[in-house]
Structure formats: C-alpha cells, structure tokens
Length: 256
Image 1 (cartoon, rainbow, N blue to C red):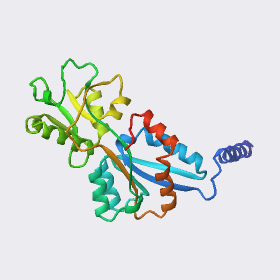
Image 2 (image 1 turned 60 degrees about the vertical axis):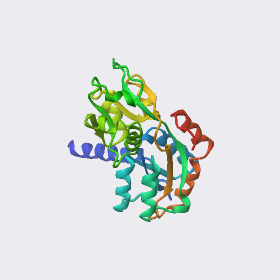
Image 3 (image 1 turned 90 degrees about the vertical axis):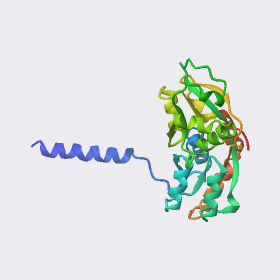
Image 4 (image 1 turned 180 degrees about the vertical axis):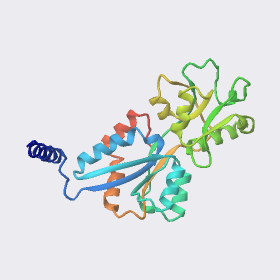
C-alpha cells in the first residue's frame, strides 16, 4: 500500500527539480575566449559585464599560457577570440592564418616584476643579484611557450646574467604556476607580471620592476574559424569600453 505514495513523492520531487532549473534563453549564444593566464581575474568580470549588456550571451573563458592556447587553436579547438600576453605569439597565429587580421588590436599593457616569498630574508635589488650564491632556485615561465618567461629571458640576457642564472631556473608552464612556486616558498625568487604579484599580496613581495625587455602589450583578435564573428567583434569593442577599462585598471593593467 506504500508504493503509490512513494511513486507520487518521487514524481513531485522530479517536477520540483525540473521547475527549479533556469529556463533556457532562446537564441542564447556562447562565446569562447582563450586568454593569457594573467587575465584570469580581470576577464571574468569583464565577461559578466558583457553578458549583462548582451542578454542571451554566455562568455566562456579558457585560461593558459599563450603558447599552448595558440597550439589548441591551430589544432582546431572551437575558439572565437584569442588574447595573448605578447606580440610574438599573436604574430605566429596571424602568420598561420588563424586570425582575422583586421580585427587585431592591442588592449592592455603590463609590467614585469621580480618577486620573492613574503617571508624571504634575501636582500635583492634586482635581476643582477640572482647570481648570488644565496639564491638557489629562480622560477620563470618556459621561454618557449610562456610570454612572461620570454620577457624574463630578454632581461637576464641584456643584463648579461642569463647563462649564470640558467642552472638555477625552475620553469613554469604559465605565469600563475610561477606565482604559485614563489607564494609557496618553493623557490627563492621569480619573474611574474605586476598584475599577478598584486593578487598574491601578503604571499609575495615585489623586489623590483624589471626593464630590458620588449614592451608588454597584450593583443587580441578574432579567430578566423569562428562562426560568431559579429559577437566576437562586439566583445573586442567592449574591451575598450569605460567599464572594461575600469576593471583592467583595478587589477593593475595599463592602457596600451
């Protein structure tokens, strides 16, 4: 005699769950944005603001080092917008015919900094001091695929200490991995962007802003294979809107 009641309760529960689900928005579009790891905090806020101004749109982000993101796009990953942390990788994407050239533009700038763990007792004035015997491990992004690592290599090469520091290097697969190494005290120092150091306040401290490298200007472009070029262009335009500029500024990015 209890089975009908149990079945009834089960049906009620099922319909209750079904009714609780959000109603799909007719004509909703997903926009996939592959972006440099250093944009992990700023871009989601900008994405939410974009969605509010474009009802029925959902922005999906894929964050990683710029090099691997380029490889994904080259292999056919369904991406609509690509934002890199350096010009070299964006140039490679353009040379491979993966972008809409006319859509490419620069949207923010950044600064390279040398950081140490918050509780570090080392006294470092800049990259030149990384040759000191007390410095055992230095984290950098892999220069082959990670823009922040390439900027660090340029700095150390210009300072004529690249070869001396090379045996101490611990390579990270993204700027955020380098930041984690330093935050956890697994290395003595590391090179990250100023925006990354800012979000780890209390875990790392900045030793110096670093010069001797190419200007750090972030480019963005529409992916040639995207079937949503109009929406992608709207997102690119939105990156220069006052709301977006304010968000970038909050996280420490400058204008290009």
